[in-house]
Structure formats: C-alpha cells, structure tokens
Image 1 (spheres, rainbow, N blue to C red):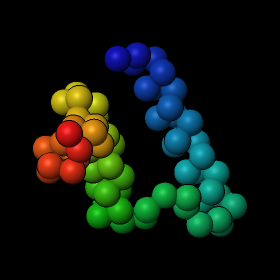
Image 2 (cartoon, rainbow, N blue to C red):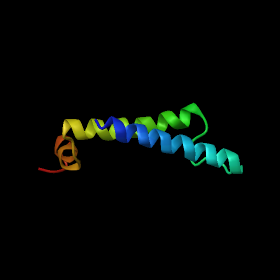
Image 3 (cartoon, rainbow, N blue to C red):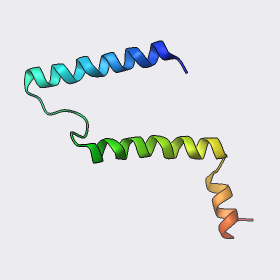
Length: 67
C-alpha cells in the first residue's frame, strides 16, 4: 500500500471538509456513522469479490443459469 498517497488523500479530505464547513456548504459525504459504514461496506464488498475471483458468469453457472 502506498502510505504517502493515503496520507495525502486523508489530508485532502480534511482540508475539503474544513472548507465545506467554513463556507457553510453541506458536506458531500454521509454525516452520520451508518452512512460512512455503508461506504466502507461497499469498498469491502468490492475487495472481497476481487480477492475471490467471483464474477457474474461464476454466479450464473453456480445457480444453474449458464453452462
């Protein structure tokens, strides 16, 4: 993992969030923990499918719709 890129992304997010608060604009992200966890879940689901090699074709074949 590229830690420098991760740190820069975090810094960019912090500055952007501060700017939105400073100008009184609504935050462009879920302001509550459940919304943030939903985004984390999307990311983890994406990584899970990537790591396991699942695909639509594998799912359809498993369910008996492709062969």
